Amino acid sequence: MGGSAPAEMDLDLRSIQEARRCAVAAREAQRAFRFTPQEDVDRICAAMAEAAQGASARLGLMAHEDTGYGVPEHKRLKNEFASRDVWASIRDVPTCGVLRRDEARRVVEIGWPVGVVAALCPSTNPTSTAIFKVLVSVKARNGVVVAPHPTAVRSTAEAVDVMAAAGEAAGMPPGLVSCLRTVSLPGTHELMQHYATSLILATGGTPMVRAAHGVGKPAIGVGPGNVPVYVDRSADVERTARDVVASKAFDFSTICATEQTVVADRPIAGQLREAMRAAGAHWMTPEEADRVGGMMFRPGGTMDPRFVGRSPQRIGELAGIDVPASARILVADLGGVGPAHPLSREKLTTVLGFIEEDGWWAGCERSIELLRFGGDGHSLVVHATDEDVVLAFGLEKPAFRILVNTWGTFGAIGGTTGLAPSMTLAPGGLGGAVVSDNITVHHLLNVKRLAYEVRRPPEAAWTGPGQALGAAPTGDGPDADLVARIVRQVLAEVRR
Image (cartoon, rainbow, N blue to C red):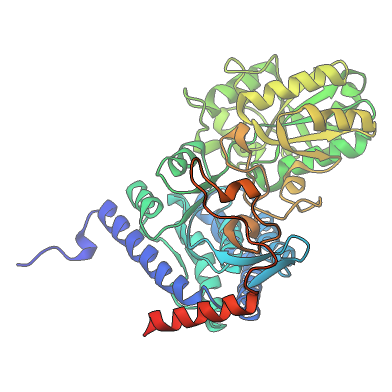
């Protein structure tokens, strides 16, 4: 009666073993892939991007079915962005062989892969994040093992399978791209700390990102995005209202850069309210807002998953409040910011806070307060035509993406702005990350440098205390050809 079969092992043990197997296989494949020429790498990535784009609608529906979050059609758009737009942004980036030559400084830069990337994906964007991370990893000749959220294993694994099949058909080594299917916290932790893993790319909740930073491997993580949207008296109020409501309603607010609280300049606050109502915003009464806020958040401040990525009508059902069928988002007037005002937190659902302040300076201070309560370093939106106000927000706010007159949702990820298209937005040192960029292929590419001598060491370096080490060579010394011949002869003798 021998030992137990693998299928009878505990979930944690099976997950750990799968993580080990995928990490080792990815490392072996990556070693075979690391000297692949640029044209072959690009052909493989193009095939994967095309396959993911073609499956965008199906994957979006699967993501919604797995989690219950968001809108399938909007998830399709995010999948298309993660495949088509991300690939377009990195397609012409050199990653193989000689990248650049600086003739003046006599430095040659050469692309070198990081190794194997452990790519942690969230439940809110399970397929688009996986598509993005596979593309930017393989473009830099890395292996990648995707670790899905437990609630989104089926859809995330399908997105990875679609890309892996297309890549392997185009010549990619089997095992270079894979996805965990038996998911547990011990298994994901094993993947992150495994000797074959070189770098962790973590997108998800704060506890998971903190765990990624704590395993002793290089890690790029993201932070929460409690995004304020300041609406100045100089703004185009009607357009701003439509933008804010549409952005907040998009995929039921499951992108971390979505607007979380409007900070309205008092002279235009009334007009903004009416324009937002016309665009589909439904204001809750103070009692309704208290009820929603009390149910939406747990004692520690984390969201109850039942409320994540839900329609206003579903939130109304859960909280026992009346919500009209026409409502696209719910809005709550806030009396302040902080734990006593739970709806001033990040809300990954169709609930928006609203605060009035008199003047851009007061709006600036309130925006900083919101960021410090749960979004330091992430993103902020400004609607204004007064460039002095825009610049003041850019200079003074503790956020690394200041989005001007655009949607928070699409603006931060580079969909409606010139920022690098990305599904992973780093918040810099303020938010606990090592960088403040939209993560892309550059962050997963090491660069080694050939550096030729451009100046001789100073005279004083040739002598030591109390001892002459010799004078600096002069033009009267042996010529370079003679030295080279001597070196070749010595090397030949050593090789014998």
